[in-house]
Structure formats: structure tokens, C-alpha cells
Image (tube, rainbow, N blue to C red; front, side, top):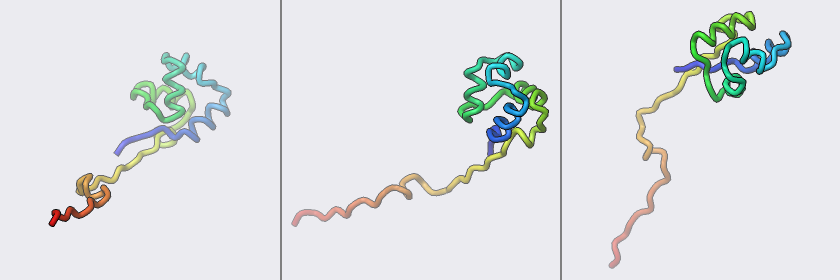
Length: 91
């Protein structure tokens, strides 16, 4: 399991508050590139930045973050590969 930012909520609230990514970056003391990666779900903020972001946007943690689950499989990778052709010895 892991968490990702709820990009729809993040974008909507930023627009409602007229906060650009550059302004958020200044307020959070991070680079604009970091904020841009957050908005594209290419990176995830550190816990202290996440809490500050939630306060700036007046959002709860559950509104800002979406929990994702991953399904693990006990099957090996070879179970998903294409079948190998049968080898017939030359006669």
C-alpha cells in the first residue's frame, strides 16, 4: 500500500485560492520543480511538507491524499510470459 496526492483536489483548491505552483513552492520552501512533480504524481512530498501543504490549502489529510493498494501475486514472472515452442529433436 502507498499514498499518492489527490491531484484533482490539489489543483482545484490551488485554483480556488489563486495559488500558483511557484507561490506554493515559496510558501513550502521547496523548488517549483518539486511542486510541479507533486502535481504530476511523479514525486511525493516529505511528511512535514505534506502537512504544511494541507494547512495552506485548508484540506484534511484524507482530502489531499489517496491511498492506493497494490495486488501482489505469488506467481512467477514466467507464468505471464508467452509459451515456448516445443522442441522436437531431429530424426
